[in-house]
Amino acid sequence: MESTKSKYVSTLVHELKPSGIRRFFDMAAGMEGVISLGVGEPDFVTPWHIREAAIASLEEGYTSYTPNAGIMELRKEISYYMNNQFGVAYDPAQEIIVTVGASSAIDIAMRTILDPGDEVIVVEPCFVSYIPMVELAGGVAVQVQAEKENDFKVLPDQIEAVVTEKTKAIMLCSPNNPTGTMLNKSELEGIAHIAKKYDLLIVADEIYAELSYDEEYTSMAAIEGMRERTILVNGFSKGFAMTGWRLGYVCSPAEISSAMLKVHQYGLMCASTMSQYAAVEALKNGRPDVEEMVKSYRRRRNYIVQSFNEMGLDCHIPGGAFYAFPSIQSTGLTSQEFAEQLLMKEGVAVVPGDVFGESGEGHIRCSYATSLEQLQEAVKRIKRFIDHL
Ligand code: PMP
Image (cartoon, rainbow, N blue to C red; front, side):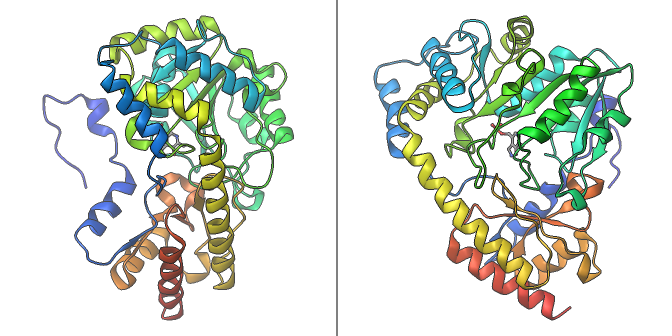
């Protein structure tokens, strides 16, 4: 719906479209008995020992600002973690900034690297915030469509085809929201080759790195020659079930990191103090919790993917994150029609694939970060909905 522009609102912000996910949340909010496969957040509560660490920090009276880049204890833990988990070394003093979720990490990255009119190649289907964040930073988002035929893996040639003199960076997300697709080492190498050939940065959103189910995870920064041109974004929301703590981080070479720190310092000052203490505990002692959650997500993924395929909704096996992205093309409905009718007739909320980009059309995003019982009921309802079409 077109709204009239207030004289107080900038043209840029006026023209931003509200997130297509919101509309379905709003519709579902007024209905009874809805099963939501719509939200992109863990159904687990943050493990108790992590919550306790935040409580302890409050008891100690740690209630003031921290250094802009975050407490050194946490930056050191992040540095160990990046090294142990992904084999990439970052200097905690100069190359790591603790941010307000991965969201603010992406935001400060964009505002740091873009001059007006600079282009960022964004691989769709993608997280709904990428394009607005590029645009809010004065950049131009150039979309490339990862196709279903390739299991939603973008091909290096597709990226190369849209590189121009203005291209500054490629935005990548693996495992991906909304498709769950994870890129393996050789696929990352193919994209890295393009970045090196044209001297581009890669903004690698690795927020779902912990949630990979079949193959070992490879970070873009671990690919040969890429540490120097990668802005690596990660955080605690997904792997550690800490969405509400608003804590993420960004690792990059000192030259980029010190520039990003200026943006972070003026815009946000620092991330929440108690959240930072909780995150130290998460990295020190949270591994068994993560492993338990991953086991549970894997079981649910296997169940929901198999169920979709059995009911005739073609669904590739997502290697990571907690989303299934089945095709609904066999129903003859658009993704918006499917999601709307499914919600109205059967009370199941899913997200239409077109909100994530052109190649997402013909699909729906279903989050399986919900209990197996709920998933079973949702599957029953979706099957009934399809049978009655
Ligand atoms: N990137 C992706 C791909 C996401 O799906 C999300 C959350 N939905 C974020 C970033 C933002 O995460 P955070 O809570 O750390 O800001």
